[in-house]
Image (cartoon, rainbow, N blue to C red; front, side, top):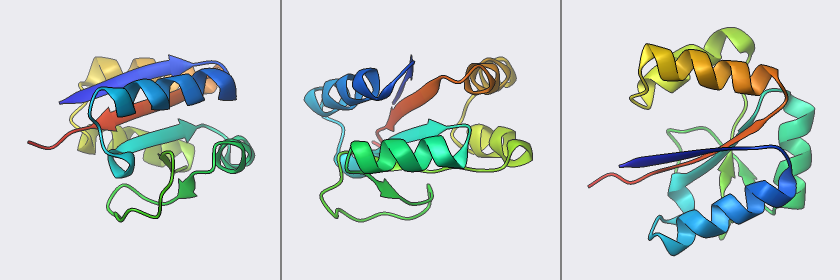
Length: 108
């Protein structure tokens, strides 16, 4: 199962993370993504998150994980999460508009 929220700022990102935790997602399965590295770093610091890749795991008590990629790597990372071509296109647009993605993946 996966849940994705598009948010506009750190406050909404924090709310989304808390919501996913309340739905039973583990901290190491919640991710935050902003298009620009500086924005990701800013949010990582503000939300006390780790900056790690999808394939890494571990519970270092982060609120959520964050990761950032160059523009040309985004679609392949989204596809690897099981998103459709339409979803990938929409989420890349959202990132280009300065929005933040918070998503959770639960592997059954």
